[in-house]
Length: 76
Length: 263
Image 1 (cartoon, helix red, strand yellow):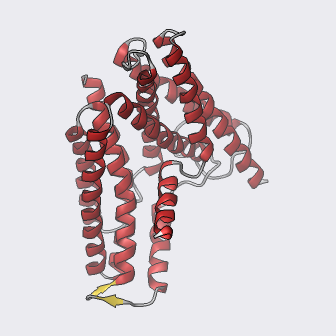
Image 2 (image 1 turned 135 degrees about the horizontal axis):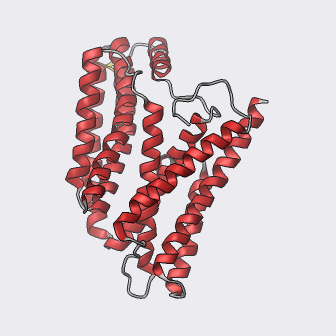
Image 3 (image 1 turned 90 degrees about the vertical axis):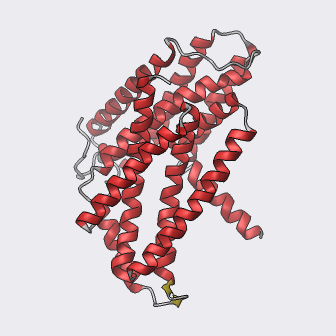
């Protein structure tokens, strides 16, 4: 039974997170920061959407740069 | 739902499903030709039945137990993670830093594994062919189910999302039956690039809107310009991806593999 649960957990992890956990971690971090800002009510909603979108783009850039460097190292 | 988001919905589910169906078709074809069609088709039927159950349970649970804004945030986040994974791989493939997906090579690998496996007949069906076909169709199909349900629920039209996937299934299976070989001519890597862009765009849009669940009034956040912002977000992600490909190619770290997506 434990083996089945573990296998299911691993399957879910692979399915959702995939082969680069940094993307999931980055997305969740940006959205969590957005949630804090939204709950404070200190920033205009429309500005929050743009800032969160920009934050996600930063996450995408960082993960692509990391992967590209890794691929370049492998090809040397 | 506006016309633009309706078209985006059908296009997204059609393209994403087409890619998954092509991959599943390759596996079933390899098993059918190597281990016999009886086991391959029974494996496919069993996988489709399991997917139907998973769809009913997953869809029912999501719609009944989660409030709308939480649904938007949860689904948007999953789509965003999913989309960024696809987009990252597509960018690296287009820049020559990752091998292109080759359906012919996958077909050859599956056939080699199928020939090497020992015969094991159970209930008149070859166990190896059945299991491999089941696993291939179920796993690829699960991605289709995930995309159809998440897109459909968030856009408020599961039938429209399902129609996009059904059209892709008809097209891929129809073409596969006619040519009777792997659908290697399908520009899979380019489609994955487009799907990555669409998933990332909708994920960004919905996850951010869903953050409104944390606002004092719990109302969804509004993007500047409303739904028109969806096109702006799509344009921004497209520009981002194309610039990334160009910069990575220019960085000199590119391998000899030709890229499929134009700069």
